[in-house]
Image (cartoon, rainbow, N blue to C red; front, side):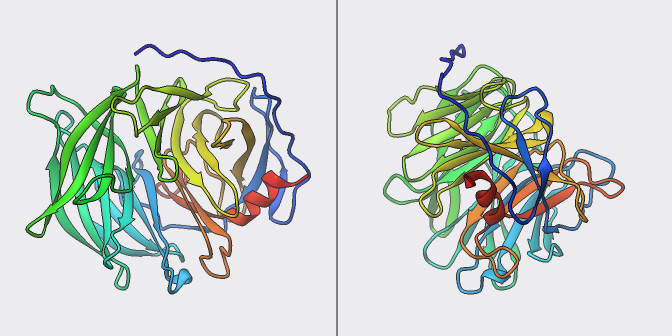
Length: 357
């Protein structure tokens, strides 16, 4: 499918003065919406693969009973999957191969299902499955499962996200983004105690894509086509077509590559956050209208800035005293002199910045 865009004429919202926790406004880097700066409050230990583009995508499990004991997962796309505490220390690591993107879902029976795109075989995509024990912070491997029909040609697993179950007997839906822009939708089902994916259908955009996120409220899938923009798919349709949501360029504040995507539905908001990798910033959009809300950067504080961010994740609600209104996690592409890692930001401060009048 060839991309088609309709330029929107709505005015961009101006950002007001900074509140506690931010620095000065960042460079506009050729876009018309300035970015405000905030500093990280925490970070993970570096991934084990040094001197390489290795850390990629995070996922967050919020411990509702003890928010300060919540966990963050992160992929080393050359080695496997990490579990971190909010202190940034490594709690577990599984050498599971080339896992690129990761997501998780609570199943309602006390189990936490973790899944990731597995590109260990660059021609045969698989979904790697795990169970996370929230108390011990340990992962149990459930295997890496191919899912495409045998008639499908070679494809490379790249992006990944999960949504709620939509059919009887499902645990969740999983969406694997192939590097060429195809998105494969699968149902994660359990049979005789074993969890595995069942292929359902595919959607497609024209060029390389990775970041995706599902809005369970509306049933929409959002996909980042790296050099083009963000697309929206209505998953309730038998054959969802790609609808333009935001474009790379001046108007929407996105600088290629478009990378990780996350959703905020806290305190009456409905926002989509995207990694604007080309200018080391993050662009925020209104989910209902697609209009830009604002932009921010993680600037150089005591823990350093983020740059060339791949994956991001966001969870609202309390995470204890350090993150009382939510946690934003971003991959840091340049954590020199150490290997790449993930930075933690107080999401409540960002919300205050972007909603200031």
